[in-house]
Length: 187
Image (tube, rainbow, N blue to C red; front, side, top):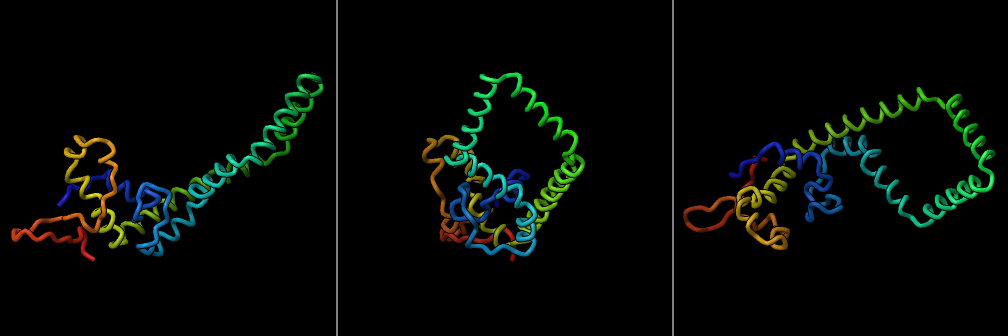
């Protein structure tokens, strides 16, 4: 039986695609159904996982880049031709934001979002550890790497990165020579 350490448990807990056929890629888990705790945890961490991803995807959109660069060019042109007036307008904007922006509400919102993300990650992790099918699949697909760590280091990089089918990984070799796979955790 492979030695399963803290790092392997952390990979199961924090890996977005834990249990996917193509782990390590942006893939959604379809073969192993999520339990209720995992679903609740995913909803609670949406603003961290999917929200940030959508912001970065929007930032790479050419239309958004065009608008941002146009606004930057307009401000730069204003500073070049009317530096004093532009400086006073920018200063007045920051003074207005400093007086009337609800900083306490923004601070509390960031605090609440942080706590919600931490709680959601914990709930999702508990759900994954309670999902025996996911645990068996995850550790079966990683047992080859766990058992053959020294051999993998000596292989060329392209062979190390080759996909390993978790179904065909022998977890134990009986004395009669027949290969059988058995789960690491009872179901």
